[in-house]
Length: 202
Image 1 (cartoon, helix red, strand yellow):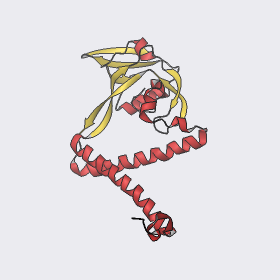
Image 2 (image 1 turned 90 degrees about the vertical axis):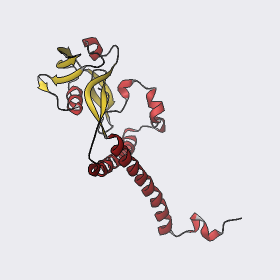
Image 3 (image 1 turned 90 degrees about the horizontal axis):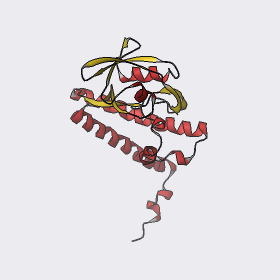
Image 4 (image 1 turned 30 degrees about the horizontal axis):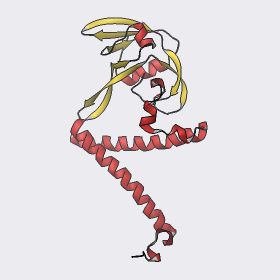
């Protein structure tokens, strides 16, 4: 049967229409939060570790002798505390030789590599800039957390994803990028690995 005109969305007063639209956005955010809570309680928090999951042929890491499975324990003699420290250090060392101390099958090795300067999205801001890259991807592991912490971590991840949406819109507006740059994960998989906006890639 025809829907009465007074039930049309367009016939609702402005506050009612705003409430309806905000309700949809709120439910999307709530669903994402609940999914994160379930995933974290089941598997833990995904954490990147300085272990080479993949090494790109022809890139500085491969040319210097880094192999898949190598565990990087120190850079320029300073012990590594996290993958993020390695990411920041190499990103800021384009064209500057650095020394990596790695462990391969239980044996310590010292490898000297010079990161190449590449224009790539900053893993934190998404803005393209000149960064040092050696052509290596991190391994990921899942860190168990108490059930009580899962809710807080899920909230942090939800806020982080929301922030990335706004930062992406900001980049699109400020850099003059077009709709073609919003290809999603399938389109991005066809791009060169160095152009992936991912904190896993170094």
